[in-house]
Every structure is written in structure tokens, then in C-alpha cells.
Image (tube, rainbow, N blue to C red; front, side, top):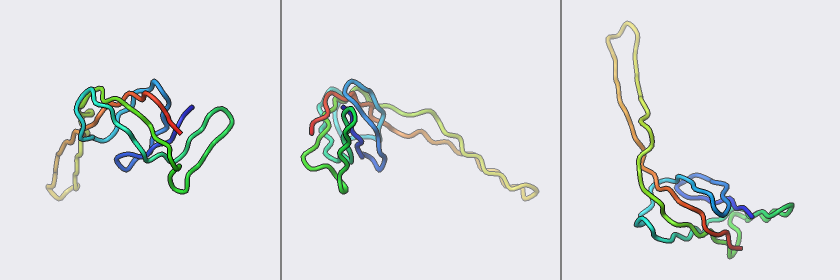
Length: 103
């Protein structure tokens, strides 16, 4: 059984036992998180699609860790104009382990 969830403005296809990295959540390490924004649930050949959410469906997950992604380099250059700008960014994330898909 799998589900398509929405968190942090992004959509993820998840199944029980998987680990995913999502946008930073306000939860302690080891805490149980319930995600109720489920867009679709599928098992085998059947698929239930919500409009926009599946009623009564939830996904349970455990917070494994918090961290930062690899650095993204931003470099801007205007040739012959003596303009160079260098910048970097590391996005925060929360790693979740999916424990159950309910619904």
C-alpha cells in the first residue's frame, strides 16, 4: 500500500518502511508525526484519488533526524560589466520514517 502526501509545498509518494527527507517540521527527534494531507492512496491495482484530499486517510511517520542538504552554489556574472556575485545556500530538512499508511 502506498500514498501520495503533501507537506512543505511538495508531494511525495510514500510506503510503509521508507525514509524520506521533507521540509523542516517543528517536531522533536523520535516523535510520531501524523500527516493528514493525503492526495491519493493505492494498493495493488486499485487507486483512490481525493478531490483534493482523501477523506479520513492519514500517514503515520517517526522523526529520525534533522539536518541540512548539500550546499547549492549561486554564481552570477555579467560579462564586461565588472559584476560578480557568489552566494551559497543549505536548505534544512527533516528525515521521516514512514510507519503506516491508514485509509
